[in-house]
Length: 309
Image (cartoon, rainbow, N blue to C red; front, side, top):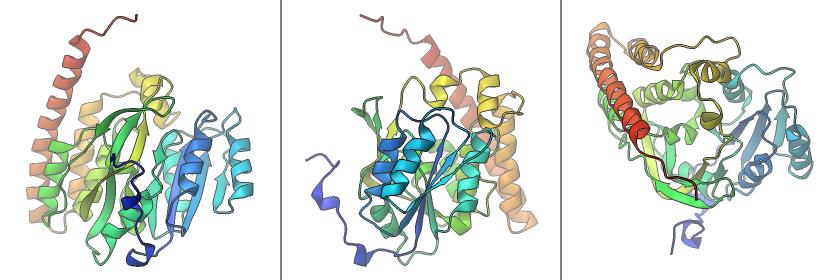
């Protein structure tokens, strides 16, 4: 049987951590998919949750849909905004507004399987060194049909922070782990989502430096790819910069990202010696990782696209 919806995955809550979990949904003009995301959050088998929706001044029916859902599920709370302050602000205010011991972002167009929170919480049990748990995922299309399976296989459940950081840089691809379940106290010690392209990579690096990151094998996260998602709708450097923050200026991705990796590592390191060693290792691997990213991007650009039939 396919793992999705398998009854064997319905875990017993009495063997899991019982702290409050905050699910944070950032959204701007998401009326097409927000109801599905809310339903998937409300349907979690783990019941001790709050669902926060940060609306970034939508001008469609998003807020009405959220208010309707909140009238039926008191765990849902709308956080409105009078103007759009960008995705970085919207993502981050959810973390600060949350009350939970654990926190999980859920994009307004993505979905969680019912046992997602419960399965991730189980990996935290009796393991204070774990700061982030994420499930395997399925890529879905606009109508929710499965397109393909995706595994990050970051393998970051190891003791050495520097080894975790370097391994992350070499293995990270689609950054799905950022939508996993975070220990909120650890998440708050990072710079969260910063207003530049791929800053979620830096956030995952900060989390990996602070604790173990665990992957749950079950496919409990559905990442939706469609024509109007944030990546497809924002192609140019200027559009990407404005998506993160309305006043941001477009910059080259790689130099800023590598600098952010090095700065995050230097700020984390407990001693000067470990700081020099860690930043050297991370900086060198970051440059190589970015070079590999650009090579893959060029190959994709050269690959002939199938003609529409």
